[in-house]
Length: 395
Ligand SMILES: [Zn+2]
Ligand SMILES: [Zn+2]
Image 1 (cartoon, rainbow, N blue to C red):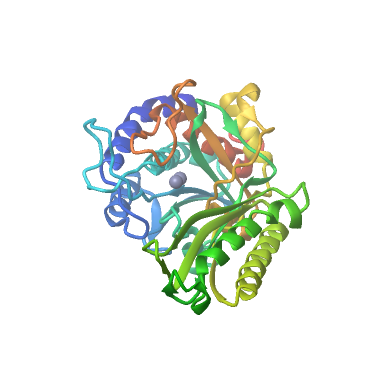
Image 2: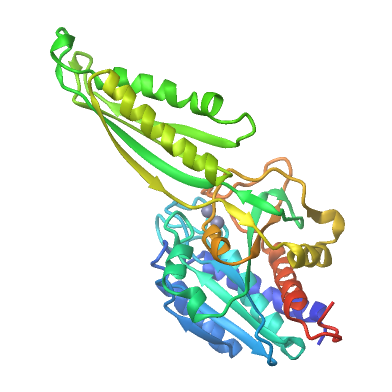
């Protein structure tokens, strides 16, 4: 059967499946029912798989021919701690949890891609791996899979992923060589002062004054310490100290996050944050206790050729966007791209240009109309990477 017909026929099933997944959101590393549901589907499709990779992660595969070539496609699985405000029939049945980032849709696309690619298996010479990854939302499920031997247990040459993007128009695919998304780190600086009566400031150490100077100095990092071309965001997001108007408190805590596109810039900011906090506090006769947490690396695409061709084949040249600003958001697909060549793309899913829905909103809903686009895009990548030469499957 031709791929167009296959995708048309299977799409309604995967739209329903997406809605079912939407109703049963689970938080990162606890996607137990989600994983069981995926396993049921893999068994229905007769596809081999290994469960429990990096916790609740699953790796499935379709192999044909004798070639050692292989690629992997990836879907995330987890939901968020958000109380859903939608009240349609398939809204979250788990209070306080919601699929507000569209990972329900990514799983539907992936299962659809497995079914579609399986129908064209005879034209394949190599292995397609399908990675269902837990805990994308801040917990680093990709890293857990890498540390659980993903690339040792499965011989994967290249890796590809997509994420829906409701703030971009429906049906456009965004692919860029190099950096797509920023790295993400966060910090906590606790300034250790000395509490006293506010009428006798000289008998204590006021950590709030030191904190104010630290915050002001941190805001100069991007303008004074980095090249004007370095792209980064240094955020101070929270400051807490003191309870009353006549008491100097013992401590003051500053918290925030750092985003950068380049490793060198990321490192330089970390160094400056630590220096400023340490020395500024010392200047006021106090000590700064710093906790600096290194989060997701920048997402850097290193092999975009077949992804680009697949996008053009799926949505046409005019809908394949390559000239755009990378996002300051971050993504743990970056851990895979640190290990293997590959490409992470955005799939525009906007329903309305006037009022675009945003990811992580309590009224978000995945746009099911992009399911066949995602399936086709993955199929086109497999065809380009693993198609038998001189067959219809190959380009
Ligand atoms: Zn997401
Ligand atoms: Zn998200």
